[in-house]
Length: 311
Image (cartoon, rainbow, N blue to C red; front, side, top):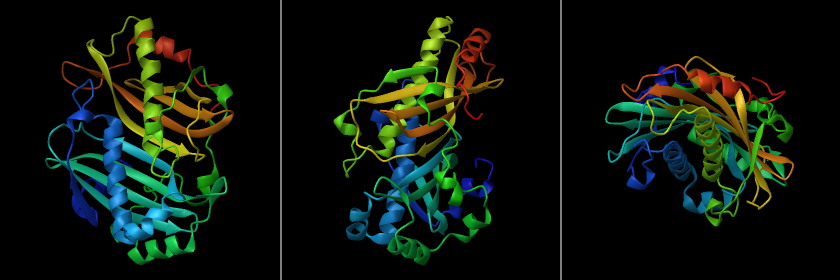
């Protein structure tokens, strides 16, 4: 997705909005946090929906028309306090849902892109898109430039939406922790919000890597080698209300020369709510460039591979 040049051109996006960055979103690396970046993408999606439906028509639909899969590529660091220009466009519409393309731009740079697949959740499972929603999106019309860029568009479009892609069984993960949920994890419809789920995924990968770094004597927070998230791809398997029985599971999918792919999943009881694959890149703090995974950490990571999951 990040190699599609049209995604990094603001002129490709039919709708554009300027949004502020906030100091509260700055993380310990002095960057706008990755989930805060995803929040900006989500806001751009909401602005597109308001353009298509208007608030009165869209408000009652938000409980059923929800994100099925989303992939976010972080191309450059986003900084506070410069504002961000968000671009949003419709890529495709079919019976099972529709795909939106999003781009974030700051001071003339494309700092990130996102592809989001949206579908309809009803009676405990994903269903065909309501006719009125499908017709409204078709009337709005897929962007010709975006559609020409397929298949680099949707994460899991069409028939592939219903495949879980592996990872939905709790037994495949070497690490698991009880997940404490909060009232703030609810969205306006009383369901677990997409961004709360993104925070859970962030907690899982951060807890795993930082604990491993301490085990190996590598200070990933303050030492000469740090890490940044390059991309995250998430699939939402269920729409739920947060509950005390939720579990956060994590493990290693792949170790590269300068990066590692971590799989994180959220379970409510035995049911998997969502799964994310997260590409983490190790960097040298001196120049901010990718650097090889520390040998001691790589050896420890190998012992935490997910069992029996696609890689």
